[in-house]
Image (cartoon, rainbow, N blue to C red):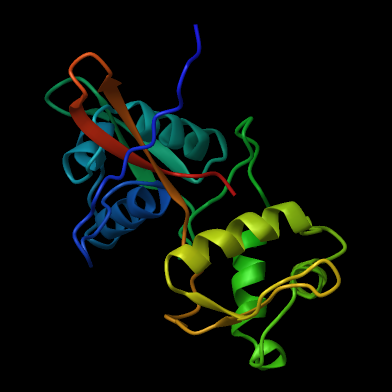
Length: 211
């Protein structure tokens, strides 16, 4: 039996805030810290668009193990632990897939975005040039990763093609939508699609694609 891939287009209102992801969770924790208030998984969940608490719980576990947040020793009315920020920082703490903290907060996508915004590439850039420019001794940026990010930014209208690639000449892109220093993030939507009813059931959940 041949399985046909399903392609769905899910629309999001222009300018609508995506209240999920680690940047959002960390902002809520820092907001609570500014108000000198503790927070729980429930508090973060209540101010997010998540369907479950799992993603939030995992992030809080990583923060606690890294001693970035600490338990207060108290519980909320539902018996869930309350936390406070122990190590304040404006940038969202980053972790590897195994939960190990990343000392250098720079990501490949942020490095690529910085390079695209630099005056050096105001007249456009090639794949190999932007990859080399964004790479460092401790964080090489693979051309494959750069190509994925470029294609997503191109589809979203951040880039334009100045010169279409051929067998002998590489494609040249240029940044036309410079919205600021923070790199645009790639998100994916997880949902349940029933091919029998040809409908999506439940609320789609948007999560960030790991850099």
